[in-house]
Amino acid sequence: MQIDDVMQRSAQAFALYKEVAPSIRAAFLETIASEITLVKDTLVAAAQAETNLPAARLNGEIVRTTSQLQLFANLIKEGSWVEAVIDTAKPDATPAKPDLRRMLVPAGPVVVFGASNFPFAFSTAGGDTASALAAGATVVVKGHPAHPRTSLLVFEAIQKAISKRGMPEYTVQHVTGEGNAVGKALVVHPQTTGVGFTGSLQGGKALLAYAAEREVPIPVFAEMSSINPVVFYPDALATQAEQLAQTFAGSVTLGMGQFCTNPGLLIGLKSAALDNFASLLGTAIAAVAPQKMLHKGICEAYGKGRTNMLAQENVVLVNQSVAPADMEAWPSLARTAAKNFLANPRLKEELFGPFSLLVECEDKAELLAVLKSLHGQLTTTIVGTATDTAQWKDVIAVQSTLAGRVILNNPPTGVEVCAAMVHGGPFPATTDQRFTSVGTGAIRRWVRPVCYQNFPDDMLPDALKAANPLGIWRQIDNQFTR
Image 1 (cartoon, helix red, strand yellow):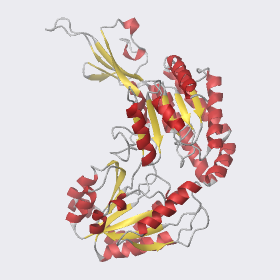
Image 2 (cartoon, rainbow, N blue to C red):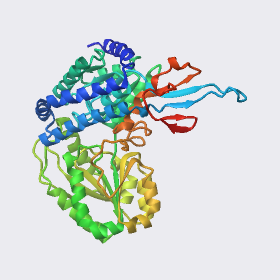
Image 3 (cartoon, helix red, strand yellow):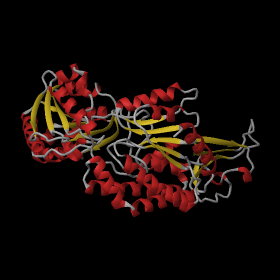
Image 4 (cartoon, one colour):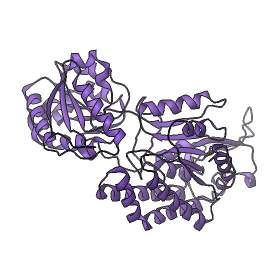
């Protein structure tokens, strides 16, 4: 398949698709969700064979995928997401002020890279694709080689929706191929206007470099790396250790740790309460039976990374489960002192799997030093009682600078798909901390603002016309109104 042909077709389809009325785009998204639901059993069987994920997890992920599509359908039916702003003309002002009207419009064809750990919700018809289609962009999906049949089956469901709703033939296209060549060709093609990616730091940085090499650089919205630091404050450890150990053992080992929000770094003050918590957590993690990981590459990377982590100076294994079989992960908890953590950059690297490192700090100053040494994160979690949050405000304030989502007394695993969600964060969690890849805010990645000056009403988009035919919320002369 020639990438130039693919992208030229995407550009031609975009010229038509961007003009499709929001209500019709919404119906298209809803039809994709319906077509996916119709072949749900086939999709689950294919994904089980390719990813080792259990049926319950995959069924839930399909529901999440169809719910995302419905969420964006509802968003564009309501319509206010275009952020229509009108400053009416003031001809009697000195100098005279022209009529100015602004809104968000789709930027152009988008390339979406499927994720290995979410064969549905972050892949072919996942959040990147759903948000781009909602925005009015056409999409080229690069299927992930870890689940090629699953990806193709989902694409076939999208094709049926395209046909049923009369969308331009190449509104969504699907390409495959291993190695870097196909991905690079998609990113550097002149018709590509944006890229969505969920995966490794190495992969995201490579795409970012390709985009920067272009004559016209484009944004790459990549979610890449996060160890999601959790700070356990003293009163919580003293009063809730057993409950916290069970909760966070479940979070560390959920899906064999194959989530970008896995709590890979646990931090607390040196104390008998921390020792007790470490023992309880280690025992709880050891009770979790090893399970198969997504594919051989991830399993081998986890095994190698775990071995390297435990080989670092002054890193001590607290406890682990029974030895894993082939393709299985080894759930583990390790422990080290803050001074060792601060001196060894390798301890800050993400280890994708059911592993967490507990860092023991001598005092508040050392705890602050640990937090300030960290790079950007998707999440950071505060585990504390009302007493803790009153006494540790300065540390909590530092935590709040680290991540796109700051959590109080919940584990970080689990990402609610809603308008308020931020699934993003400072680099290297993502390449652009201003945006989210989950929730309705994700649509803003694929649009650009356009200002129309001195246009007659009949030449304006409906969202900016005087009569407001779409009935959306707009800002007119600094007042929000319908």
